[in-house]
Length: 282
Image 1 (tube, rainbow, N blue to C red):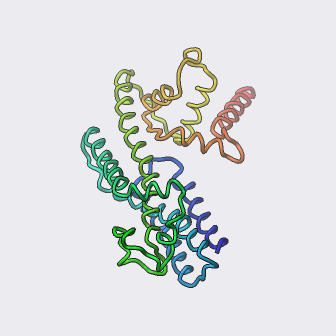
Image 2: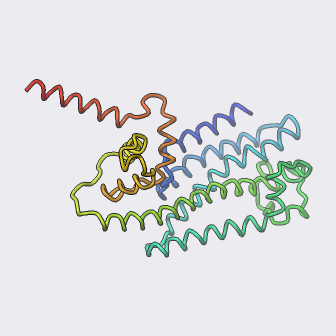
Image 3: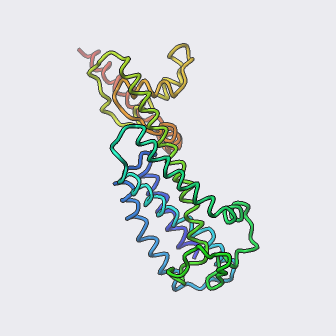
């Protein structure tokens, strides 16, 4: 089973890394990921229908850790798809209120499942046979788990609840980023209003602009190095009319590049040297 499961997890993680490199996940991106993950999840269902677990520990591990991890990705992208699809076209205050309502819903879910949250987060195991073994449901413990309409061969009392917890952990980060984006847009608009009107708009990639911003920050060439990265990125966004999104997460991705970690800057150097060589021949 391990090889089959590892292959599915690798495919999902790889696609997330490629398709959702920054935190600006549109409804189209979320729908794409749903359509990517769902068939893999169904493959897992078919596999488990035919698979015989070696012992209770293997079955508990699957329904406590493996299935919830995969299902949480599906729930996460489904929630983002619904959120972005229903996002209001109002003011920034309306948008903030919209995202905060979802945060409240997550808090309500946590409060309603507080005992289980504490059990799972503390890595307790004494109730695992009721929570994560098929056919061992205890309805006094799982009265709100909705087991009546679940696939009995692919579900236990609480695997879906764990998946939802994990999805909400990710969604909370997503919502925080969306709220920060709203605030950042307000700052950018204020800064843009204070700048003289210019015809320049960044037409390169977002990653290239972020690479440039971090290079300026690392070199300390503004205000004798007394400028933080947030100020530099905000100025780039305001000056060149671009939204850089979660630039720190993009920076982490840049750091993990296997080949050229500064491909944009390298390209700039090469083009400048080529230009100099061409001018020398004139």
